[in-house]
Image (cartoon, rainbow, N blue to C red; front, side):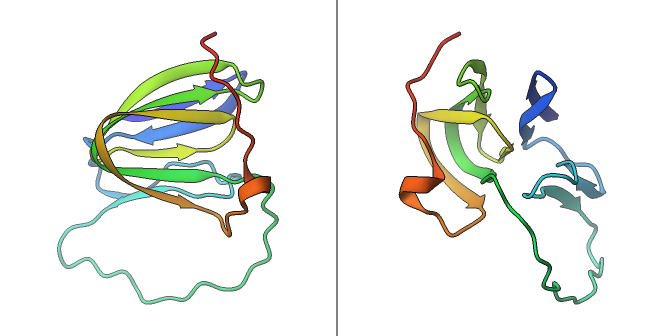
Length: 136
């Protein structure tokens, strides 16, 4: 219920399917990624101690995104760094996808509600390069 999408040994994306329900804390993304993704399931009464996050300088060279599909159906096309199609997969309500590297495109199959989380601020003309889809 956790899927890794790779090409040439490089992680392109990860999906946590809505059926995943393991107790505890599960860091899904590898620690070297700038965008960290964890799944948590705790019983009623669990205490998570209050905390603050310390200032830490980080160098982020690549924008990574997390998509939370709240409802609907979405086809995700995942490309490698050469813009070659690696795979297409369908996401449904409750699925979460981490886009780690490579390229991606989407087709809405059924009206969606989705939340996107990524490093900011977003800079229109410098943040992304569009390309024509390839069906390799």
